[in-house]
Length: 526
Image 1 (cartoon, rainbow, N blue to C red):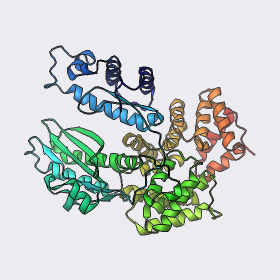
Image 2 (image 1 turned 45 degrees about the vertical axis):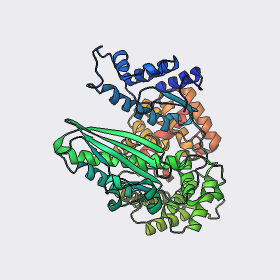
Image 3 (image 1 turned 90 degrees about the vertical axis):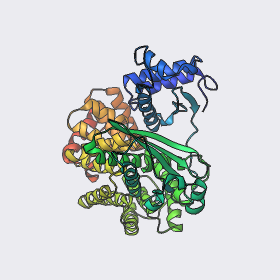
Image 4 (image 1 turned 120 degrees about the vertical axis):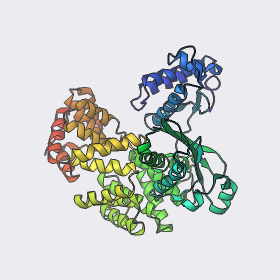
């Protein structure tokens, strides 16, 4: 990346800053919004060398001129929060931006750089191999002598629940860090990534710094700091909660490891992709359900399971492709007359091969749902959730199923937790939050969720926008959504109620939605 005063036009940077500040996904506090604006303005004015903790504290945070950054860590803490807000923005609303604003660790001056367009993932020989090195204790930890070693162990356990990764066991990872040599790791373990870091205990809080490193090159891929207030009576529970959050950030779909594996597009056609790369291409498709991608994804996964018939994750992903082919009526070149049969067979095989795989249970849950067996579907999804509580895709989809059934006590907490812990997951699960708000008359909230679905080629996001906009009297927006529905399925209005019933939407919800669609201008009924 280049600094703002070099290669990137100031007007382009200011436009990107304005987009960030206006974006719903940018969740920074007002103080940190001012922080971001200040450092960008200073960098563009050629004063990046003045962006120090003292100046930020006195000019942005209103601290006294006697402010001492050695005694008051407010700027460092708020900078960490601002970095996390920027990262969430570029994982969600900002993922289509051509420019990125970052504040690298070690200072407060921003850098501005172009984002390369996303293409096909690079081909890997197999699932990533991860070595978690022993975290290093920092400061006096005599009061909690097993804290750091315990954190490393819990992190390993949490990562092993993501069965699409290969995690090195405790005997290797819990050796003294001095014994971990990157060259030896590549030679003996063939690890693709190292997870390393340190823990720090203070009088009233603890902090964990985590770094993901590419083993072959030593390139820093991802870094994050996790902070918690130190409550001695709760320290074990808090330690475990942070370890699980780290595992989610690293290993879940659209997390740091998968995102890095999908970098550096090589432009290869799907038939030349390796098996793991075919799985990564599936995840790129799963974000928006782009109908133009589904056949390439299906072909790549079919080749993967033909060459590696015991590759449970590929089987599960292929099952999900066939479930989507049925639920969205997306055409494929598959010979099966009913893709639901193929989805069930693939998911059952994935579960047989990997009974501890939460993703296999997830695929089975969706296959059963679209086959009409709702109780068995929920059982499979709950089993997947139990196997890996850190997989927010399962939390979100399970919440969505409960929302469609109008089981709000189960739906709302799952959906809110899934997006709170993984803002980067697909917006399609926001349909469940739309249903929750819409059923309770919170039409402004329902419309806000519907707008964030981000699956333009799937009509249900447009259905949600049309219904909520009509309920709010926003005739123009409702009409635009109706036009989008007709563009995808010209006859949808005549079968809307039957279609929603076939997807197991609760009758009371169907009645509300069909009425709102009629008010939006869609001709409904026979």
